[in-house]
Image (cartoon, rainbow, N blue to C red):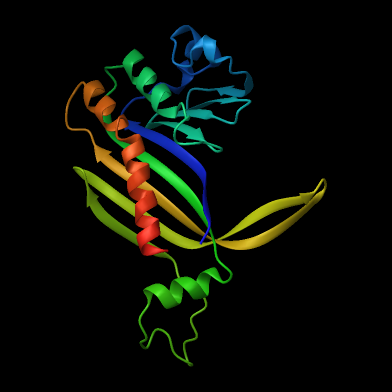
Length: 217
């Protein structure tokens, strides 16, 4: 089955984040998004409860009181800057009580009949799947221990849109595979601990990629 990475993100959970400090100038002056990257700002929002900066390459940084989220919708693992942004951000604000880090990947997998595939592959016959109870769809959530953290996977049917002409879109059903690698922070300040977690970014992707090859095929 063909697959492609469509989304990756890093989430840093903490108490008492200050969303109102997040703006393009703060990110540039503090060298969180270095000026020599030449990223152009596309959208920005700065308020006390929620702030956001989005760049023209679609990378987006969200700040709420409980978390910082750095999102790369078109990311390529080897080139993505989001681990660098996350590391730079926490180094500027080291005394926030950081609680956890999430490394997330979203993969689209081609399948002619996604629900049928998931049902036949993962669900044994039983009273939950009979002529009386004709099962149409299934969503799976699986959780595993991983490197002093957790590796959580969800598998479900999704819809992908493809542009085939300038103004024409088609939709097709796919399997959506989401991975969340969750690591708790146990130290304060947690900067060194988070930096070590962020170094596992590629390792997490490789683990998820191999997992999909083994489990989905």
